[in-house]
Image (cartoon, rainbow, N blue to C red):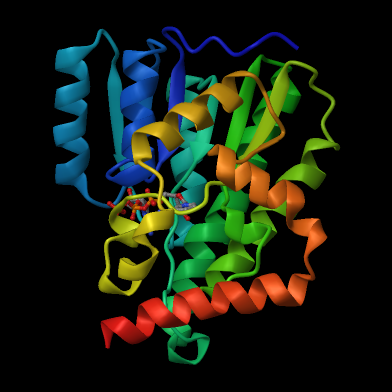
Length: 267
Ligand SMILES: NC(=O)c1ccc[n+]([C@@H]2O[C@H](COP(=O)([O-])OP(=O)(O)OC[C@H]3O[C@@H](n4cnc5c(N)ncnc54)[C@H](OP(=O)(O)O)[C@@H]3O)[C@@H](O)[C@H]2O)c1
């Protein structure tokens, strides 16, 4: 399958108002000449980003303000985007976490996480894939999962579950498709320096975080090359490759210890 060519094509990115989504938007415009459809709740942040990208590059930017934790907003959103822009690719990146004990996670916050990280992603992926299956167009879809999909993460238990869902869902779905010009990528970063990891609870984990520019760059290269799964960072790839040498219980226990230490220091 030939590599993706984003030039002058519309690429949808959810969660583009900060962090990884914002950085991928900037790089897609600057390095690859893509036009962008950006989605998030914070309108002001999106407008500043649009202005900046349009001033610095020849790319066009369209904005959609939406709360992806509200299922009702999701169906109409993608329908409109598909009709108005005929996108070439989509990066389903929006996500939230809960850092702390699972028993401190309220049902309300859990509902919001499941709707943002899982339900809206499945709804949008279904519509996006259907569109490409019916039209047999060239294109691609990226799911932003996490290394937490591979390594169950204590103190981010529910989050880790949502990211595991995305990995299994997307890789399984990829085998059901008939369009040979359409590919899917599951991107699985380890820790990244973004708003998500800016809270005190992550203080002791800062040494493990990668710069967002590097993560975005590697993610877009993997997407362009149509890799089915990709982990950014040499050390992250190494640890996932050789993790089979250790018992899973041991890895989970050690991960839990590191997180607990960081959370204890905060309080
Ligand atoms: N940071 C890490 O260590 C790390 C590691 C692995 C994977 N990831 C994944 O990378 C993705 C991006 O996270 P990030 O690190 O860049 O965090 P971030 O800076 O907090 O960005 C999260 C983005 O998601 C959007 N979002 C959250 N809830 C939303 C909702 N209900 N509706 C619409 N948009 C929503 C936010 O926009 P608004 O608030 O404006 O809506 C924001 O643009 C997530 O899926 C995350 O799980 C992060």
